[in-house]
Length: 353
Image (cartoon, rainbow, N blue to C red; front, top):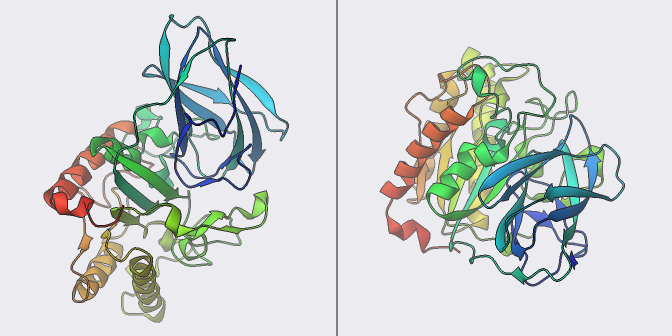
């Protein structure tokens, strides 16, 4: 039996494109769909649109995580998720492991004839939104043998948003997450790594549901569809490419321009979310401390007019690893960020939503 995408018991989370409810498009990492279903086998029908790298689909059934490599074609395919399951009901979560190196359309699950479909437990009331780069997306997180080291050669197989500090923090706090994270992204147009040499910045994608130029025209996001209690901005690491002007000349014109644009970006988020707690940060990925100085000074200026804005630094901020954040490092980051947010008190979870 088909469990179609508009089935009442399918539970979605993430910034997902629902323009066609019969084939919602998953764009951002951590986007997911959950259901409870009986039977000994389960399949899923999807189509994949590849921009680069190999692309993978993540899923968890009864607490056990699996992964399937997606085809490079855009044809609809049916992929097996599980066989020889135990009798009874099963908890199923299908999720997007990677950033806009691809998007996929979801056409539903295929369960055994006569299967019982039930709704999962309700989504948590708490809501988090993250604006970040590859670290927030969980890129190369599964390369645990390279913890604290440079990245291995890879083609997307190690990336898993489930093991990002962002999703770990959300799970720690029992919160929903929208993870607006893109590998290589910087703040400004013309910097970073994303879409080299025609670099796109977070300023261009933060308000989009579809933004990847290799995959079609841009689409605006309706911010009324998701109102987070906490917004984490983790930008300021890829901004040093192709020129680390913040490290080389902190008071130079380029560094001053970045700080003004960063301040403007935070103010735009505040206009969108008047009551959310805004947390400004980077990560433990190696970068010059002047970027954190710039963010800290900007936060100090903004706090004069905004008492619900915070600057957060990890214990080994900017000096933790030369490669991407592996699972053990992400766990430590998530523990520190979780403790910081808990320290802000229960009040932060009652303002937006």
